[in-house]
Image (tube, rainbow, N blue to C red; front, side, top):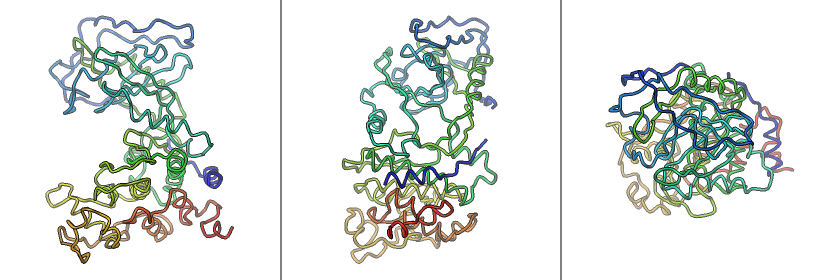
Length: 449
């Protein structure tokens, strides 16, 4: 299996894809005084091959202390849970913090420099209370795979991890390779019409499926959150990272200085990217060798077994591959799922599934505990929402490229009510429509061999 996947990986075509600071609505004031210098929290090391970078400490653009910015705007924000990062400090006696890239409910993300290897890294610093970090456990499982699989190269790499002792407890830090823009940003900002043709989309989906085959067959991991924003382009030109570092020295990011911490405005991070996107963000990933039934996936991307709160497995990722492929070539999602009030409604979502896939087979209804809510004992739809007059062909009328019929057939293979009826990542990869033009054997030819 790995040999077939490797042959496909070698023949994938890899196209090349070639900032200004945001205007804040919150008033800024420039400091008229020098801020107290924050000492680095570690001593210099003889192993460092790169000198520490000095950052300005005076005449900084400051937010008023009454203004809420960044992580402060999150409804669940508790300041003591976040590590009080200071620009320029050195973590783990190795990584100097250069610029803030983003924030979320569970972490803040920073551009850093490995002082020992003289290279850029991304530091993801988690809030307290996560002594057993789930994403770290997922990466450990992937790293434990001894067999060589080409799909491992299509997953964002974890370079290192360590713990930081903060004022209110320990924080786990993951060290990643820097990556560029997401596939979603690429489409929205750099692709004419914000859509690709079927031919342009295929290499991306082939690589995604090879990566999924590694996750499913070798690492026994389910990603559960496949979407374009979690697929990031590689960065091959570090000059863009260097220019970001220089920008932070010459025009520091605005910040708010409090007694116990400084909250920085995330810098505009546009490192571009070159090549096919790598699969990233394993915060919602699950182990596939245990039973899973948690609520997962964005609403419009949820597979039927998730909507009906049944147990699920690797095949939820196959459903999502179809969603991703569609989003690359079509301007609207396959499923909308919103009622007339604009609220996402499972009844509307299921009605759309019926319209596009046909009614579910009897064994699906018999297996699902919540099926009685939607269908009567004879399998008749209870008219909880009108079944729209739509089809894949009508929704995808404007899709550009050759053999649209082949694409719709490929989609229908992945979009099955019963998870067991969906193909594996490898089977979906070696579908004759997706393989067209690569010179590889189709499934029929492989069956003969």
